Length: 89
Ligand SMILES: [Zn+2]
Image (cartoon, rainbow, N blue to C red; front, side):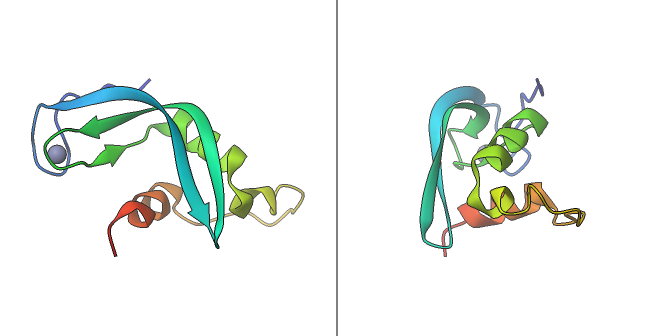
């Protein structure tokens, strides 16, 4: 598990590990990752996911489910993708 004590966005030490059901959407289809562990900053609301969390998201995401049987290598920077989806429009 990744250890984070300082928020990478605002530098606050109020960032802490949370475990929640995490819901996101892919092309209008919502999906939930149950009991996902990630860091959340109380000051700026930034969320930080470690590799395990991202792997779990990928497992649940319809975007990746589609590619499961494909031999094509996925080159999308997943962390970037996930974080940008969470930014308010
Ligand atoms: Zn922050």
